Image (tube, rainbow, N blue to C red):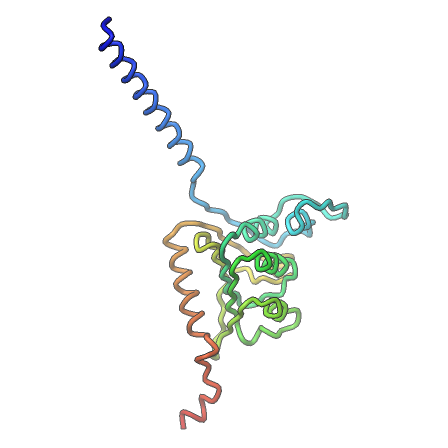
Length: 213
C-alpha cells in the first residue's frame, strides 16, 4: 500500500472512530438529561431531616432516616442555586421554612407571594422570612390567593395540592408534581411575575371605599 493510501486509510479510520465516540457521548448525555417528572404523595411518617438541613453533621436521633416524599421535596428545594419563587396560600411548616432560610443565607434570591388572611395565622413562617430579609408580598383582594407552587432557578416547577403546613405533610392526603418541562415552568413563572407586580406595596389602595364615593 502506498504511503498516500495508508494516510487516507488512517484518517478515515480516526474520523469514523471520532464519529462513533461522539455519538456514544451524545447518547449518554441524552440518557442523563431525561425530563424531570416526579410525583410525591402525602401524608408521610415523621423522619429525620437533619442530614439534608445540616449536611455533614451526624444525627443519632431515634426517628427513621428513610427516604420519603418530604425528603424528596427538601432535596429539590435545597438544590436551588440562583432563585426560588414561592407562591403559597399558607406556610407554617418549620422544616420547609428552615430550607428556605438556608437558601436565602446562601445567596439564593427568594421571593414569596402569599394570602393576606393567612400571613399572621398561628404558626405562620412569614414573619421569620421577612425578618431574615426575604421579600414577601400578599394579596389585596377579597378572594384567596390559593396557589401552592414554587419555581426553582426558573427551571423546575413544584406544584400540587400541598399547603406548606405540618398538617398537610403529616395528616392530609396531598400531592405534588415536580417537573422541568419548559411549557409548564414558563406558565407558572408568568403567573408569579403577574402577582408579584400586582401585589407591589407601592400600588396598594388603602382607602378603596373612600375613593370610590
